[in-house]
Image (tube, one colour):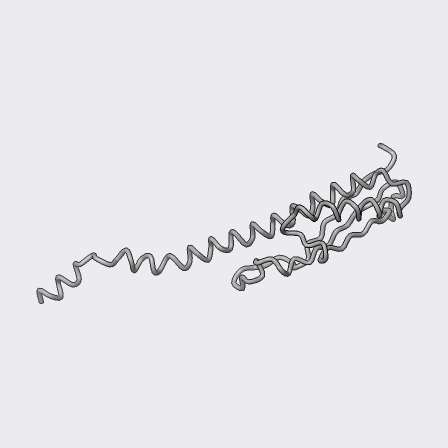
Length: 140
């Protein structure tokens, strides 16, 4: 009886058991935050690149020249971004069909190589990140 009472009142090892229960959940949440952070960072970098490319293309006089300026800018700017692979990036420059005084730069990035897709238990965004920027030509 004494041995059973001593065993039930012994508190040694409870911290290890609590850690064994909580640690996997904590690590899963931590790694999920890191993976989503990488995805959101890539999406933000793509939006900034698209907006800057659209601003660069304002100098073009024709759609062909604007496309060339955008492609040159994208080629240069993706060299400095570790999350964006130029081979997986599609860029289109087109005049807005509803307003001929505007053009839109659209980028679509295949983000399937980012580590977020290894998380099977959480709702995941689309593997393709789509961003666009519209610029008005000729002022207001």
